[in-house]
Length: 114
Length: 116
Image (cartoon, rainbow over all chains, first blue to last red; front, side, top):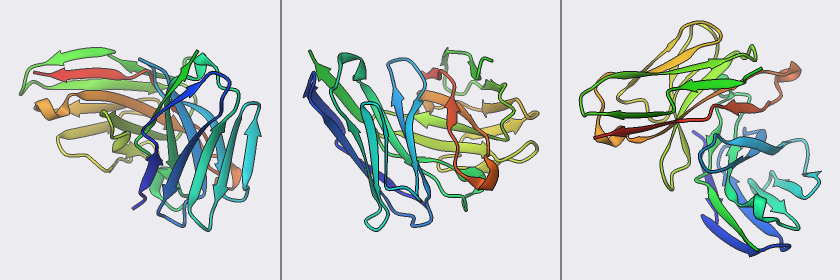
């Protein structure tokens, strides 16, 4: 089955700096890579996703890059703000897997210091 | 449009007690999932249902059962709760897109379960 590894587990940055979270996956058939943000006491919420036919995607201060050869994808947050503080999860799924199950990384606790 | 609704939000059980966690979605999604979230371990799939009438085991199914009551509802049952089942449980649903492209999974707010 799929295995997704996520690093780092905790990340502290100064407000205005950039934050980068990295994930690797094992199943070469995976073709969909979402990133979720989870605020305290809430369920995860999608912030950006990328499909395997694209190498990079941006949405305002958030960008995701995908390297299919290396089976590696990353989340980049620029000009961080205190409200970016949360737990971030990467995930991967494959069209071939039943119900297109998502396999999640272990999460990154991001703290943006004012 | 409420999205994914889970009940209850909090529950304390004694070892050996049983309970059912309820989940309902109003987005007409075919696929529904139950995850558990433990510190440092991310979200692990317990059971899933690809469509109404079907259910399958995920990564950590032991000690749980599920029922896909209809397209909207997917419940998770703990028959005899154990302290190791203390966790936060999330229900999610996901639709499909033409051509089989991956689409967003929507999550409920979670059920915080403590087994003493």
